[in-house]
Image (cartoon, rainbow over all chains, first blue to last red):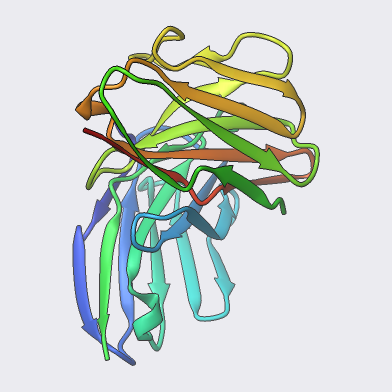
Length: 112
Length: 114
């Protein structure tokens, strides 16, 4: 079964608003990654946060990680219509094999 | 980072036939993986493609159904054999490399079995 759970499953906001997506996982990790998928295409890597990091920024993206709660959040600020996509978190399950365990994903719709 | 070319991007196939998907990376990478994404679902790992040896399959996936080759560090193929409509999914190639932990993905192959 998938390790990650994400909420909400779907999110609809107006352009300019912020979008927050949450991810929970079950086992210890080395790192956690966030991906974007547009219209069932390939995954675009957004950001990687290591288990010893608590927060990371990349442009309009802010990711937090709470290993004590086994959870992470992705914040997209000042959203744009082009941010409309599905967002997935993925963990390595503390292995060094490169295998990823994906959450169920959040579908974000940003209305112009 | 790595640039991944995956072919074909989409295909419609008859049940009972097989389709081979190719994954080409622009640089030598350590690990290559194949994932499946069923309609409306998240990604599930099919197998790790091992260079020069048999792939390592995850629970629920078998070599007879999903034979995988990896003849060198930059190329791999996944075959979906004896297809049925239940195999309709997006299949994605993924790589990680020495010096970086991020996993990068190809554009995926959208397979429809009729």
